[in-house]
Length: 615
Image (cartoon, rainbow, N blue to C red):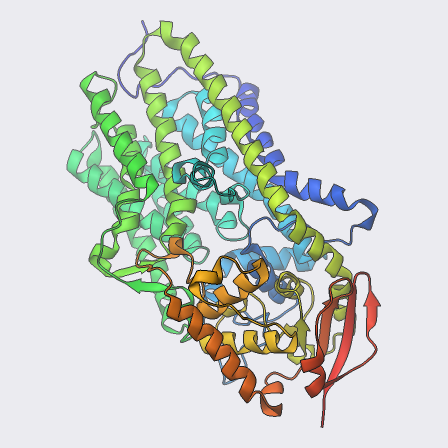
């Protein structure tokens, strides 16, 4: 007779080769899904390819720019968009990138040693993240459930369906809006992508610690978990805080429920907590040296208001009710270590979205929604399914196998749909960047020791974001410039207004009523002038609708700026180059009032002008 106790492990298959087949199959599938956009877009260019690789989510450009700055030898604290960096006796101040430096150096140093471009290094990173995440997750699931088939299906369920618990994209379809799907979210490079396998490793080590039969294994795992947490601290804010919230939930449940051997488990958790605390000390020191603009850049909100309507929390409530029902019918027992482990993930969204009730601080909680809580919910669902299967009599195996097959097929199908949509979404930007790559490489050839102080006016914001991932020169303005340490909101807007002035952009019709009627470019510029992410309600739980007066003030401020523009303003910063597309007319007459342009150098579809400030 089969052991029908809840959490009773299924006898393991002894074949080592079979074990690795079950582990390798989902890892290969996830990796193929990960690299599909890179391969597809590379093939799209064919013989016209200029050496760029696909960036699949908007923020990847700023991470790539920072990695490129380190790859070319700049110090940890620098702004690749403005050229500013630490100087002797004049520290730049810490930014989110210089504090979370581990992934950047882990990419930049090997890239420098191997002679890889930043773009190529990011392509390799996709494979590493997909493989390592899949394998670590497989061994975590197989260790908890004892079933390799379930673990293999679970890897695909968790990694392929990350957008489902948030309903991002799905809600847009239901509302009749164009769906906004992103490439598998855990793969965003390098944050959170590079840290994601470490987050899974942290959870795996904690479970290994709790189930270990020997003291040496338990305390060794506890120490290793603490060290992995230290890597998370200097890799990605939302993962180390999530790891802290999760292990706190787990520890409280462990002490309250008191499973068998709970005291040794509590001591091991205490050891991990000590190492975790030690890792936070240097982090706090770096944080104390942050640049003045960082609180504004990160949109830190001061509020004690609860946030109870996030979709992952609603999913958690459903899972909690399910656990109570399963307990009622004998399929779940809260006192078992595996049950406590699962319950901690079910509870995780509540402290993630409501810690501000105690701390009074909320920092872009949407990142918890799309990078943490969603995967925690999916992981909990797989583990609950495994426990139900463990408690079922043997005749249920055929039906369960069919369910695993169905889940596997649906998970892959959804991921293929999402990856296909996101690839199509980023195709225009990829083409623009690849066409601009020869011009960026030409700027590398023109670089001198002082080139980081040379400034390029780039007329296309897509290219402006991309240029610092290759070239050492600064840019006048780029959409992601503001994220680094030396750019205040005032300076960011001043540079944007200067760019708009030089390129002859008018912002007529800037009222709230007409905002939605503006073309995409003007809408984008207005959004930046109103304030970073001001129109994105997902970034803050204190968001309020934009008022008509805000649009009118943005337009009025721009017109006032134009009326006051003079030579002194034209020299801050002083331009050295102008890069513009030859097939897209740009009115540079305002620029020509203050700068002398040469005849320009045609580089593919782009023209690179050298400019000099008029006397």
